[in-house]
Image 1 (cartoon, rainbow, N blue to C red):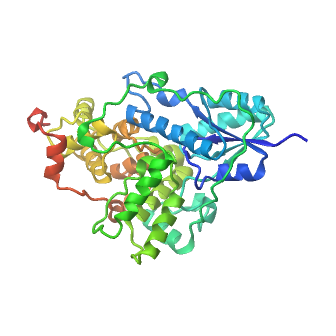
Image 2 (spheres, rainbow, N blue to C red):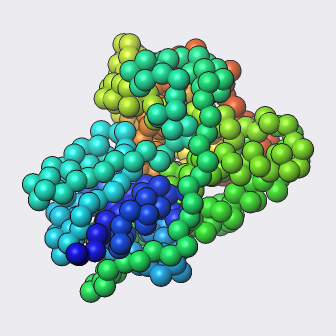
Image 3 (cartoon, one colour):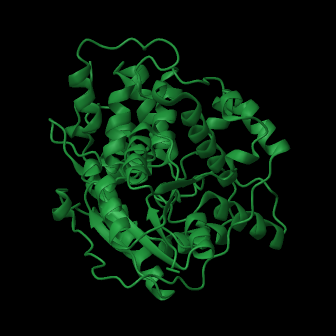
Length: 425
C-alpha cells in the first residue's frame, strides 16, 4: 500500500505554530508536501504603473516565506517554492508527488476566493480534493452564536453577542517533525526583481526595519507583552504586518495576551483584543456581503465627489495637501509602507470628507502601499469611514488607537520642509 501524501498550500498562514492545515496534514498523512506559490497576479502593474503589491510588502512577504522555509527545515521538512498560476503549479506538483489531497485555509475576499475556486476546479478534474480550513480569525466561524447570514451588521451588537456567547479555541499543537517525500527541486526564493517589483528604499527616519517572518512575529509579540503593565492609554499593537500574512495567528495572540494578564494579575482590558475583534468582524462581513465593499456606493449611496478629484487625489497621495499632519502621514506611508491606525483614519477622513475624493481611490492606494494590507480590514475600514459600510454607528469602538506622540514631533519628523506643500484652495 502506497503512502498517503497531503499537499499543504500555504497562503496567508506563513507559520508552523497554530497552523491547523499543517498539524492536520501531519496527523492524517504519511508524508506532507509544504508548498508556497508566488502568484504573478499579485505583482502585476496597472496602466498607471502602480503594482498591486508594493515594494515594502513584497519584501516583507519574501522574508516571511524564507523564514517559513527555515522553520520547516528545523523540523525535518522543507518548503517547495514556485512562481506561477497556482491552479497549474499545484496540479503539476500533485501529479509529480502522487498527492492524495490538498489542504489550504479559506479566504474571504473576491480575488483570493476566485483563485481558490480555480485551483479547486483544476484539482477536481484530476479527481483530487481541495480541503478548506478556517484559520484567519480569533473566533472560529463554527463557534459564533449565529450563522454567517445572520451575523449582526452592527459591530456593537456583534461584539456583545460574541464576547458573551462564544469562546476562543485553544491553539493547535505545533508539529515536532514533518515527514516529506523525497524532493527533487525545492525551488529558489524569488527576488523582487524576479517578481517585477522595484526594490524599496529604507528611510532612516523609520527607525527599526519591519522584518517578515514568524520568528520576528513571536519576538514582537513578546515585546508587546513586556510593555503591557506600563501602557496607560490605548494604542496599536503594531502586529498588523505579521497578522496580515499569518506569521502569527489571531488565536495565538489572544492566548498569549490572556495568559500574560493572568500571570501578572493585569486587567482583561487590553486594546489588542478589540483590534483582533475588529479584524474578525470585517472578515465575517466580507463572507456575508462580498462585493458590496468594493463599490463606491457600498451599502448606501456614493458620497459626493469633487470635479477635480484626480488632481486632489494626487496631492493627497504625495503629501502635498498643505495640512501638516495629513502630509506627514502620507510621507511616512510612502517612505515605509506603514502608518498608525490613528493616522490611517485621519488621512482617510480627510480624503473623503475634506477633499471629497472617491474613497475607493484611497482604498486602492492603501492596497498597494500598506505593508500590512489585508483585504477585509482595509476595504471594510474605508467603507466605514466613508459612511457607506454596513455599520456606520460604532465610532466609539472604532477610534481605539490614538497617537503615541505629539502631532508636532510627528510632523517635524516626517515633514521637515512644510513650505514645500501646496495648500488646497
